[in-house]
Amino acid sequence: MTTDAELTRFVRSWLQEGRTRLPDRVLDTVLAEIPTTRQRRSWWPTRRIGDMTPFARFATAAAAVTVITIAGVNVLQAPGPVGPGTPSAAASPSPSPAASPSVAPSPSPVGAARFGPLGSGRYTWPWEGGEVSFAVEDGWTASADGIARRIDTPGEYSLGPHLPGTLNDVTHIYSDACQSAGRLEPVGPSVNDLVAALENQVGTEVVKTNIKVGRAMGTRVEIRETPGLDRSACRHGAGGPLQIWADAAEASSIALAPGYWMLVYAFDLDGRRMVFAGALGPETTEQAVMQLDDLIYSLDFGPPVAAPLPLLPLPGTTASPAGEYGWEGGPNPGSGAGMHKVQGGNHETALVFRVGPACLAGDGQEAVPVRVAGFDGVSIEPYQPPVPFGSGDGDEITRAHALDVGGRTLCVFLTWNPRTTDAELAAAEHVLDTLRAVPMGEDRVRITFMLDTGWDVG
Image (tube, rainbow, N blue to C red; front, side):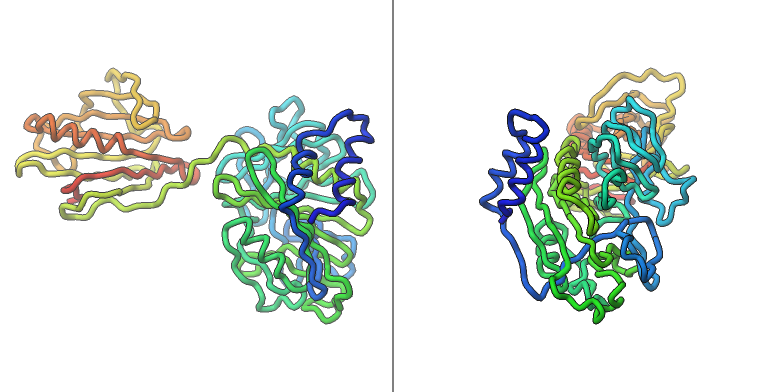
């Protein structure tokens, strides 16, 4: 359970600042006291994260280095906070200072600071689901790996994000932090999976506490070297690190230098695990720990993130059964997808999908506002030239939609013949009512939709 000292520390920190009532987060801590548990085993070593400098090489005399790497093992690069229009560093395994993104206030009353002191305000860390913002006071700084570090107090300490879809996403944990060779094992996707793996890790001991920040439920985990651990018998020797987690290939890892310990905050956000890891040294004070906690309690995860759509295929080359189908495409010239349903042997209805800002040409044609399946856009009917599936008969009629999907344009062309009945056209239009779409990658769109029997791709 959370110790009396920990709870007192939370309360004292606010009262000594002259506050007359406890903030909500302290009340949440008190209410969360009952379901929290303490896990200790004398044979589990406690671990630590180090400085988290991206891809820093390990040195045996690095007792003062927080995040380290050894024998070619690198520290995971933290995704860099970015400003408006600045790409995330998460896609680059080894950014140079010149190419790395800056930390930007959100909103931005202060200028963006590149790898330097952060003024008091809110800043952001990006991930594939959007941005996570956090608040800091003067005294924090940003580094090239996107970690906010406090540098004006004894025992410099840091905090970095390990978010879904970034290079830092936590996917594998060492079952033994000391004897780590061959002990790297995959960890499940939930917060409970991560916490259980850390609890069971040999060579470390943990203390966990249930926490809640905004709409995200989570767990705070303290990780320390097991008392009495003989580090000289460990994989990397007495001066080497205890390895906590790594990527599957062990190309980079998070590890604890001697004397250091670690704070991990793991949250469930709309079914996705959001992890933040803090490194603290031998001289780190309780006040420093409270400042890390304060930063975490300042997190704003943004609006709910829609569940990702599955990547589904189009129907087959012959009349396919009813069901859910899909497609994903980008703006490459000539790309797109289509399908049709032959009606009565002499006419058809067809649907063609394209992606890109110019997918709906319509030069000189009147476009009207439209809303299709919850997406805003414009529509042109009849669209010229028609967009049949295949060569067509020359008498096709096309209704074209250009829909906004997260700032990207999805074009949908519905085509029919004069011989198409009202019922047949209504059935094709209903397919659009079932359309779901999400942006993917840098410029792609993924869609799913429901079809009745008989559609095919020829």
